Image (cartoon, rainbow, N blue to C red; front, side, top):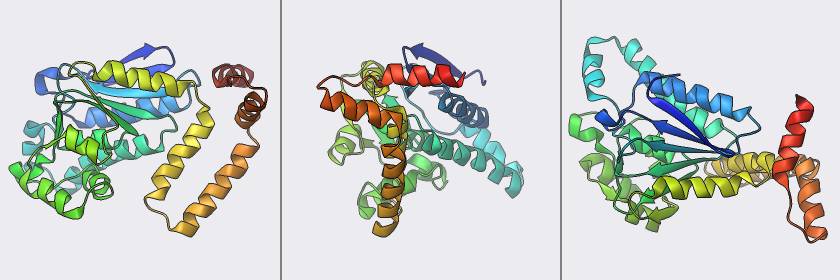
Amino acid sequence: MTETIKIERKGDVMVVVNDNPANRNALNPDFYVGFAKTLEQASSDPTIGAIVLTGAGNFFCSGGDLNRLKSNAERTPEERRGGIDRLHGMISAMRDCPKPIIAAIEGGAAGAGASLALACDMIVAASEAYFSIAYVKVALSPDGGVTAFLGKALPRQLVTELCLTGKPITVERLHQFGVVNHLVEPGSALDEATQVAQRLTRGPARTMARIKSLCHGAQENTLQEQLDFEADLMVMSQGDGEAAEGIGAFLEKRKPNFTDLRRTEAEGEG
């Protein structure tokens, strides 16, 4: 595990902290690989119901380390591509992780830090925070999927403006577009994100993993492809013990207990 990744447990919630505050939590290839491995381990851990990602100190993530990026000019194109592929591998791991990932943002998210935030399934942000697609200011083009994420959420003209100018956009405006889920007082993003995650941990884990897949697929699939995808996952859900518990609880007028079900199943597998 990389030294800049700190992990805390709050019940069934795993809190991952990008712990590099001296550099405003700038990213590097070790973080890309380390976080991807963390997600892989969390995916197979039945005691983890949701993940919160945050940055140490008062800033979520400033993006790539410019000193390292400057040295890339001396590397071959293949070496440069290798670093970018590790970043993109981490973004893909976030999408593929069956557990919901919630970003807790204080201060801001810039460059690849914005990509990191947007790759999460939900975003909780302090009201004074901002996003900045600032690559152009150092004569670099965006990566990390930021144009894909923003391109599916915002008008093309606005995305183009953000990328061509590097002009920050407030989280309040992103909240109006639905990109940010919750706005909170500065200093309370992590607490709110953890509370949201804890509520999710009480839900049906496999069902939520299917829902996460459907929400991603809806942005890319044709209607027929999405209908087929929904049908396939509904067939799986109807035969799942989670549905038996959920439907049974509804008919019996009680609250479903998916947490005990998940733990019982995990003990049976063990």
